[in-house]
Length: 226
Picture 1 (cartoon, rainbow, N blue to C red):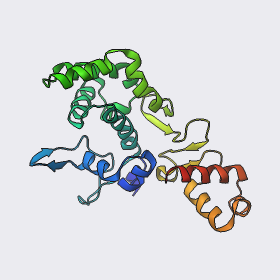
Picture 2: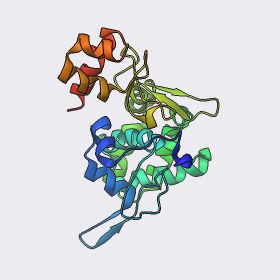
Picture 3: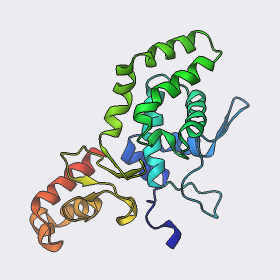
């Protein structure tokens, strides 16, 4: 267990709830899958290593990587091309999880263009080249994701504000195994919201010695995940 402290721990279901991405899709991305007789390997190896090969557990860095991968797939990039971009970006940036590295904000556009230029799929390649050829189009995909993340001195994600910086809810792999917490009190939002459902806002605030605003914030955040 000591080796798992500080990296965050999430099941695909927990990650999917936080990221608004289907858990089955997350499992396919991180375990690989077969479709119509074709093998699709995992997009990357999860940050959490377990002896149980049947279970997929994610770390905080996996969450950050999935956010970017999902955004590109929603923009029309196939999972095959995302995998190619990850492989190339890993080589260029020297990062195991390059999509969520701070440098990807500045270098990612050229990496994607390089990958798409090498793609031999004709029309699809041209469409994707057009999508990312202009700087602002790339920024529209990546900036909303990275502006809610604090990075450490090495450019790796350190904290995530899943509801935006104005809402003081934090996902911090060093606290509560990376579960969302109230930023002012460090109490998990799920705990506050569940208690408020049973006891009410005022009694929960007293029981956990937190401001009522923290309880209400936790309730609103947990509702937003449903």
